Length: 227
Ligand code: SAM
Image 1 (spheres, rainbow, N blue to C red):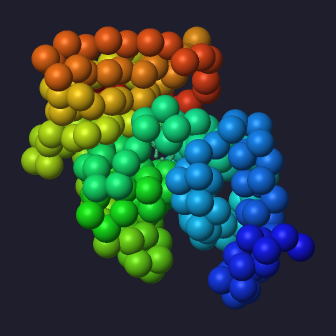
Image 2: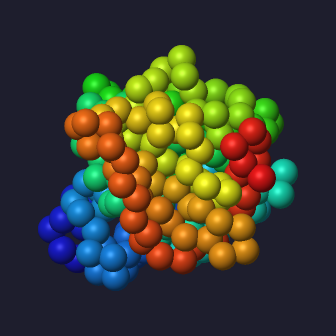
């Protein structure tokens, strides 16, 4: 056993799923050439506690899983890719649209740290409530869970350094562009049957450029700027 893993094992000796999480993250690190900060955040966040009890044993397979209400928790590789594309830094304020049970929000909260903040909006109250419960139990004080139509963003906490959406939109919602800071970045899936992950960048003058990363598969974004 390597020294680094030895250390991690000691820190996580109470977590029966650590070994599975470690193996998944070692694989993703190689396949996706992950940065140290995304790797460390995902190694720390216990994904098995964010899925329904009967899916715990599957939590470290690299696949989406059902979380109830016809919704899913995103596959770990997709969470990792979106975090890398967002270029997250400590201290940033980040908006997530589509909380689900809060896993992706927790990963981002690890990266932006205590000086940063994650505001996450979920339209289904039961999911938002569950996310709040899990995040609170795990001690995440820098995540604010809001129930509402996130296709309109969340004006009260705007502007944001980073915005990401975990459900596919018909197009980039205008309010999200408005709520993004100059110099900010947004990552979201766009499209219906054919979906692409899109990276939107707003420069210091407020000009917006978008590029396509590649094909993806997400649940639809509902609401005023959704489907
Ligand atoms: N972020 C989650 C995770 O940690 O894996 C995945 C969430 S799931 C793929 C997408 C979520 O977007 C669902 O929970 C769905 O209810 C939510 N959603 C869809 N349209 C929405 C909207 N207009 N506002 C807020 N949430 C929305």
